[in-house]
Length: 331
Ligand code: UDP
Ligand code: MG
Image (cartoon, rainbow, N blue to C red; front, side, top):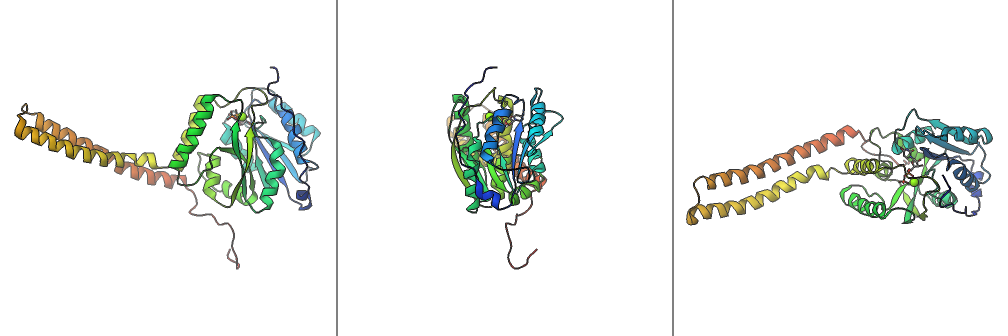
């Protein structure tokens, strides 16, 4: 396939202060059939990393069951650079699962989550590092614009992030994907969240700590097509809402209450009709039974919804709280 949208890699100064601190950075890269992107990606992240050696950098590729030569490419990269490591999953488990695997195997003090298709610019790493030096535990990339994506994707993403923001109890940043630099504390806390449905960007928001943003323009894919089919995208969107909001479950309570109000008014009309307008025999009782049972059913559904919401919260098994730091020897 011909290379599309080849973008010149901007020259960015290395992030030198980081080396002095004797810390490690891990770059976690989920990849699924990215054979044509892996080398250009590697070159750009390597440039952004500057003089990092295997002692202070780890480039961790998670091959999410690729059916092309992605894994062989990862092995080749590894052969030439000991900072490169790879994990190959037994089949395609999906982006979020590959990401979870990457976070479990990353050994850096800081972890950068980035896509392999160069939509997230690796050159942003130094800026993110500097921002983290200012004291942020999470530095996420906020997309100022998206290039090379369909109007449908742009519009649906715009609407979705706003709906999610409204529904969710925690503040999930608008227009941010999983592209972010996170500190070791956050990685540890993230690993300790036992829930199986993992909407990573939401979980990171739920954790709190201090979060800052850097802005960037999301470029078109370097090569190939998106691996997020409509079905996968809908599932991710659904996971985001169900993991971070129980409001849809409680909707029935509100509908029930509204139905009760409407039914009361309609019952008044039914009664007046029966008294003064002469209705067909049986209509009054049928209409009354129908209206009352409708409202009652919604109401009961609402009660069940509330219980399901509580059960759902319990089964997720999230810790009650997450400690950021302590003072005075509290352990
Ligand atoms: N990806 C993955 N498993 C999948 C689908 C995607 O690991 O089942 C990876 C993919 O290789 C890329 C990142 O997740 O590095 C984002 O996927 P993609 O670019 O297809 O999604 P989009 O950017 O279009 O939302
Ligand atoms: Mg992409």
